[in-house]
Amino acid sequence: MSPTTTDLPGPLKALIARADSALARALPGDDVPPVELHRAMRYAVLGGGKRLRPLLVYAAAHAFGCDAPLLDAPACAVEIIHAYSLVHDDLPAMDDDALRRGRPTCHIVFGEAMAILAGDALQALAFEILATPVPDASDVSRLTMLRVLGAACGAEGMAGGQAFDLSAVGMTLTLTELERMHTYKTGALIRASVRMGALAAGCDDTALLDGLDRYAHAVGLAFQVRDDILDVEGDASVIGKTAGKDAAADKPTFPSIIGMDASRAHLDELIGTALTAIEPLGERGAWLADLARYAAQRAH
Image 1 (cartoon, rainbow, N blue to C red):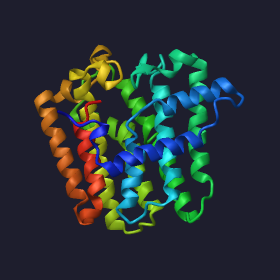
Image 2: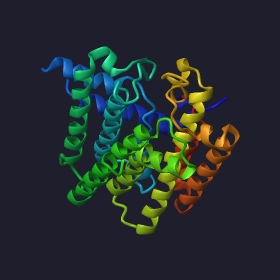
Image 3: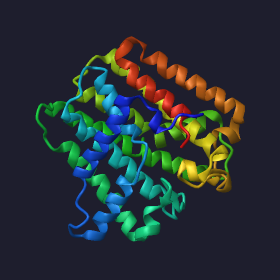
Image 4: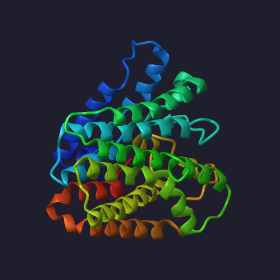
């Protein structure tokens, strides 16, 4: 049976609860004006989710001996950016999806205009959280994290990846082209999560940071390969979103380009690459290794 979030080791499951609590504190209250906007923001962020990105922040920092409260800011920031991207990706002008995390998408519940505003406000909030000084956090590392997160969101990150995605509908891409698209769209924020965790922990070892970047690049692609496999084989009641959506929209996917068997083999290869990249960390990288395997084996 494929692992689900509940199959993660105990310490990582505890970190999901830590992230959820930090996110609930960071978001505006749903009784604070403008009430409808704040409710839409909380709906988008707090309605479930794997919390993979904050877990990667915590796991990367843990590898360098840091589990301090100062990690909650980058953990919240990356998850809020992720939530904003999902709200906008689900819009009719983008992926036009009605189901996310097992319930109606933000624009279905609150309307398109409010969903757009919620996404805009979430993006701004993420940077506000990251820019706010916290005890024991270096101003230099905070500034560097702001730059890392900004790059992950922009034309060479999620926005660029979505542009590639929109232009790829109905096209036959090469494997290289498909991986470039997902390196931007999905991988950039995963790489940023790992880098920000290491930076928050004070890591300045170039070799180790490069290894973490190779790890995160492979995990980001593995996450997408698994997503594409689940789009073919998954049950909407389990995966929490519309199954078969990519095929119906004529989007290029790993199974459509290289086939299902080759996709599974590629997934195994990517996880092997990720695990090799963090070998210098030894036992300190155990949480990162667990998250790499989870990204490749999850059922939703």
